[in-house]
Length: 98
Image 1 (cartoon, rainbow, N blue to C red):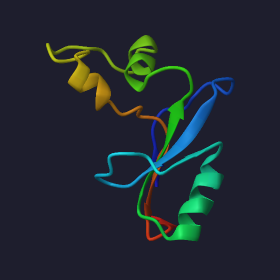
Image 2 (cartoon, helix red, strand yellow):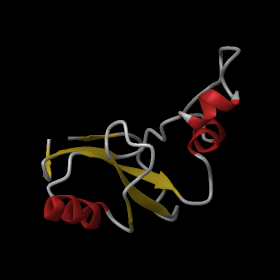
Image 3 (cartoon, helix red, strand yellow):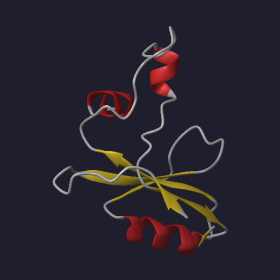
């Protein structure tokens, strides 16, 4: 299952694998297929998410009108650091797409 926003084809992105609740990402890949292959090889469970290169997720979303700050905490450090890019992503369970 995938969802998210379609990106301009010239915008560079990477795919990052992150286990639920993990403090650090465990892999960064040039393509969705590479990330899924790696997750399958190691039978991993987590989320493989596409991120824009060179711009934080919060700034990316605000600058493109994908998110409009409307509450006092929007744009504060805690909100920015937890902000999801809302780009393409896929849930993986035991190495298979869920």
